[in-house]
Amino acid sequence: MMRHTKNEKPSELTNSHAIEIRFTYGKMSKKTTFYFDTILLTNSVVIGQRSRLISSLTKEIPVNSITKIEVQNGGKKIRYVNQ
Image 1 (tube, helix red, strand yellow):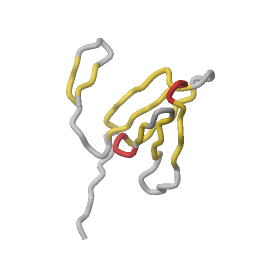
Image 2 (image 1 turned 90 degrees about the horizontal axis):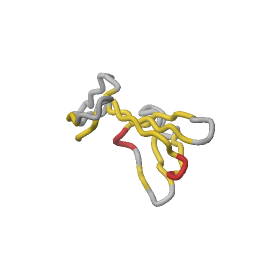
Image 3 (image 1 turned 45 degrees about the vertical axis):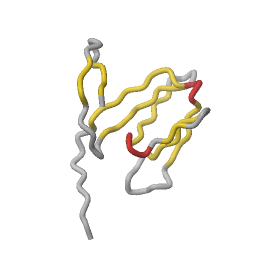
């Protein structure tokens, strides 16, 4: 995934389960962080999960209220176990 650093130079972010996306939205500049691989974008809202353990912790953010989007590697060491 290509991204831009603070100095606007593109860099590559390796895909992983620890990638987080933070939305700043609304008049009060609220911030919500989702796991990147759990978000769904529709015509009017972004829907995402805020927890991997509790999948019911989802939230909807109106697209037209988003003022800033930040993507980062959360650095969490998440591993899947094949059973």
